[in-house]
Length: 273
Length: 116
Image (cartoon, rainbow over all chains, first blue to last red; front, side, top):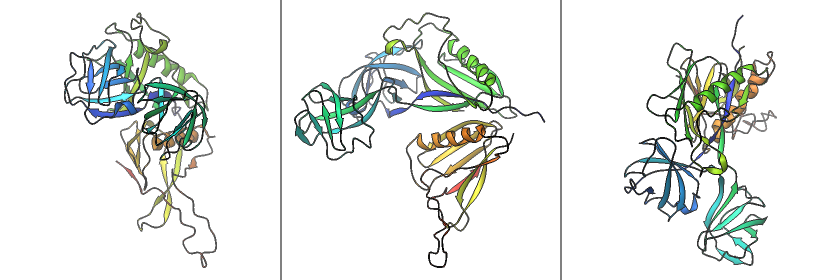
């Protein structure tokens, strides 16, 4: 009997925190406007915005208002802003939002919201509480279901707030690494890698990612995925999954110095097409 | 090596659940297209859709199936079928059926398992 081992690569893929459609033309202005959004309670600077229609990626440089984000283009496929009617996804690569809302009480060094459960929401000591109304950020020092104790006395009843923790809002996504026939960059976009499998029907997994390099037509990610496939297949049973180790092989200079503390790539979507 | 998840799913009467086998061999990827369903995509093109009676925001169902599938594949080769209790299901307990009829029924097993 000759059978293949079942092997998979485990990717950390950013989770989508907001989807929507642009309602005003931000092209040329490096902005995203969505009149139906409340960005202040979802998004923080350095979030990634993916213009799905035009396949352009941006970093949020400022949350200008509830409905407007200021953007900076990233990667090689440079955009100038999100045009009207474009569908977008937003990801949080640095922070994970735990809870947002409006304080309904006032206490010394406290954030009070009796309508939520901070414990269930996963808020922990050391997380950050942003007083959106006062534009002040405090650190959480104690957690109860409806009251957070913070190290800065800023929250008043009626203040909008956002509680978040450090670390990317990401999820584990597995991709088969056995039976791979080909790994290629997409023909028209350098931030897509297609993994094609040996199969009688078309089986392709598409990897969409954001990459800080502004050098066009580079194959860094393709090489990294290939390396991970080989490493995965070389692991011994019962190691079924192999964690993607990162981009260890950049062949080009990473020129976008403003990216997220040196992290130069993020996976945005990995799925069968 | 052939491996399966054995998953409780409602039968045609809509009351009792029986376990149905779902292969974890040849998986290409796993997705969660809706808040109440997860899909297992196989390398040969087949897709199994698991339908839950309740809603769970993505990626809860996707990660649950990923975890169950990978655990099944890690098990020894004589463990061909691994029981998987779907997220949200409460297993029935076999007690005195004359005094507690239906006590053996699972609560919230999968609604359906469909392959296409």
